[in-house]
Image 1 (spheres, rainbow, N blue to C red):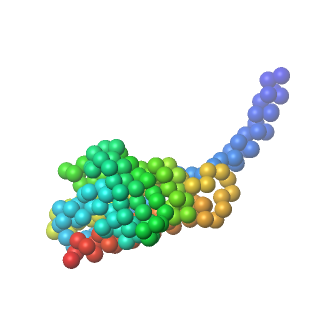
Image 2: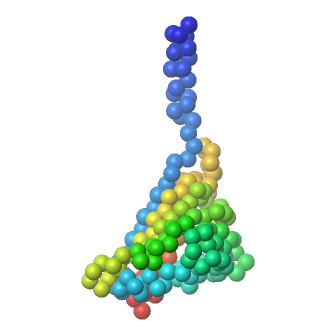
Image 3: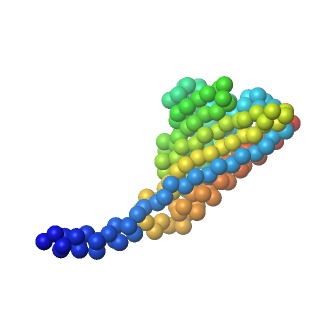
Length: 176
């Protein structure tokens, strides 16, 4: 009896091992900036200032300021463009960093789910600083065999492009 049960369990094991959904993805981007950390922080410190420094965000509507639990709604691309809703999870002005999560997104713009990220600045000690943006997320398609626009590759490409464009513009603004 026990041998049959063991045999059935062992036969089912390969099926269970291959039936998995998406894997958590991570993106980390850093950029060295020829400006003091305090200047860089002043550009990004306000949770809803993203529309002033990110070229893809045309408007930010926020409530709660920089308090944990603050909300922001980003309008992307154009005035009537897609919206992304986010919530501030951690804010540390002394360490020049904050953490936020996406609560609702338009997957045509950012095909992710369960997304959270840190944005911060580090003083390099020589008059320069490094801005860092790192996030973890799953692709928006929660099942196997996603359509190409909701695959791991699409999610990684969208997040990487978002981080690179934002960090490049922070550098540009800080070095002026």
